[in-house]
Length: 294
Image (cartoon, rainbow, N blue to C red; front, side):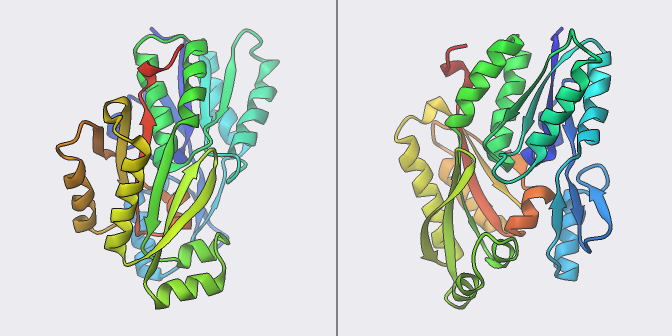
């Protein structure tokens, strides 16, 4: 039996069927549609309800990170059960979730001096973070010690990348990621941005006309970066509330490849979907954990 348990905030967007929740716990973000009433992601607001709300009411939701108390409420029962904790948080560039977890860990040290709470800034979000957390889970299942898991997870996160595009620029504009003029021009000329996330930050790559060309650009960029080393990587498509034909295009491209490809590990949840909107299409890739030195 493992001596530690994995904890993640809900920005990791892993499908519940993928993880054994006896081995992992999650700390929810908060979502509001009116800036007054907040709901806990997953616990009080499902992914389907979130996207249905956006489609029906044409609103731009806001998010708030877990509090110190939220983390303590998850950490304390694990510590009482005699286990250490390995906690992953969304990139600290985007949220204070990491700081909340660190503060909670510090507050619990005096009460549980014999236990360890290790908090990792994943430097990622959604499926990029999900791949980091998922591989940590696989290492735990494979018998890696806490220190071995930390060492390899820190290496994995540096080699994890998301390439994505969005169908509408309005959510990025509303969240302050792009200016109003850029969003307007993108809408008028059907321009879609290709964006990369690595090392905790977003990097604009190029703009293309139309969603189908944008998806092809995301695929090409991902293939170019992996550069023939398909068997060394986990790669996953992830989506929000997107068109089935677009997702089928990606799945078909990778159907006969040497990648460890999955189209059913991740769906963009409310934490990230509030900023990207329902039409985000992306690929995330991560080098396999057994290729790193413990």
